[in-house]
Amino acid sequence: MKTVATLDHPGLAETPTDVAWAVSGRKLAAYVSLTKPRIAVMVLVTVATGFVLGARQATHPATLLLTLLGTGLVAGGASAWNQYIERFRDRRMKRTVNRPLPSGRVAPVEAAVFGSVLAALGLVILALGANLTAAAVALATFVLYVGVYTPMKWRTTLNTAIGAVPGALPPVIGWAAATGQLSIEAWSLFLIVFLWQFPHFLAIAWIYRDDYRRGGHKMLPLFDPAGAMTGRQASGYALALIPAGLLPALIGLAGPYYFVGALALGLFYLTYAVLFWAEVGDSSARRLLRASFLYLPAILVLLLLNPLPA
Image (tube, rainbow, N blue to C red):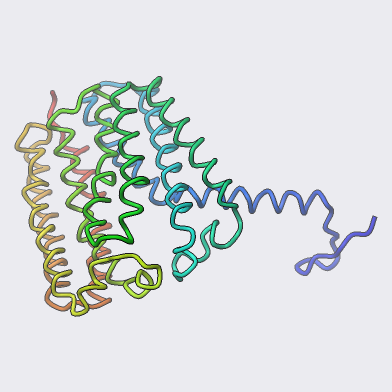
């Protein structure tokens, strides 16, 4: 049987088995990419925070692991379905053209089946490994993200507000998995993540406004060329986030050290939002985006370091 020398190693022959392994590896990498791993990691961090705060120093490692596994699968399934629905628009955008579907590495039917299997398996794991409340919140997250937010992206600039709802539900899943309830503490976590998303995504929308225009997405900066409304909304939501960030301390979920830290973080985030509003541009948007990446993990760490006992 004839073999072919590789370009990288002219003296070595590539066997059919090597080729098969390489193809399988690329296919596996494409499937992993469908789950948007970086977003999934952020989702799981907020889920874990909600669970640990809900458990209030009790140890439930098996339930926590099953909650993370189930939510991660649901999130991955939602991302796969999001890319399935947006595959034609992704082909027009520079930042998404190399995703698995527009690049042809995964067929549309494969992505749809993959996303469905992941989501269904994740919901079963949550229902059996945690409780039905957590599974119900995860199902609502999936439906809102895939069935409502995704198609709204090319219909209305309100898609950011719509998408912020499923984006803020993961810590509620964690809390529900630990407690079986949807109490005010869970909704205080929801409110923080909900409001945090607006300056974050408005900054992204400004930076990639030309790409979104090519993709046909109705993002606010496309209808606000000077950026005044975009900057004003980013600042308004950052301002609203300050009292929202203090809410866990006011309802007895977190202590005084958290209160001080949350206030400082809120003012920090607001500063960069106002600077973006004062001089709207790519550089100020990128600074606001970096500030958003610092704010969320920092406030979650503060919550975990200074919780109050139930």
